[in-house]
Length: 101
Image 1: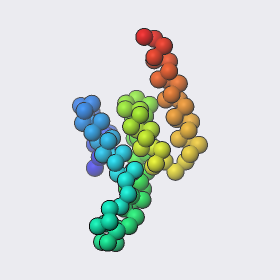
Image 2 (image 1 turned 30 degrees about the horizontal axis):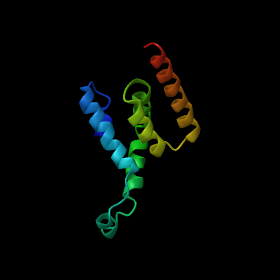
Image 3 (image 1 turned 90 degrees about the vertical axis):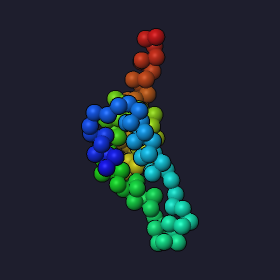
Image 4 (image 1 turned 90 degrees about the horizontal axis):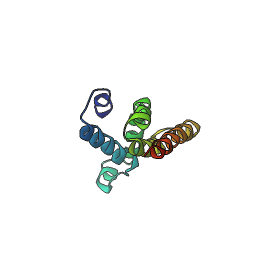
């Protein structure tokens, strides 16, 4: 549902909140109670679900909350070459923006 919501126009605080939730999901580990319940790979399932919308996260990285989006992609994108390429583009854009001030 969060990925679907990111395709819509959202207030910036809402978009940021959704990205933070995704970050928690892809960087977390299964809690002991989840392991006991047979969900020992819950974090892997979360990363897999985010991978289904990886291009939405890349869009955020290039046009929205770059830092959080890149943090999500570092864990969720299975293609390290693509991730490093986009990270370099975002870094170059950020560097260029800072020079203008």
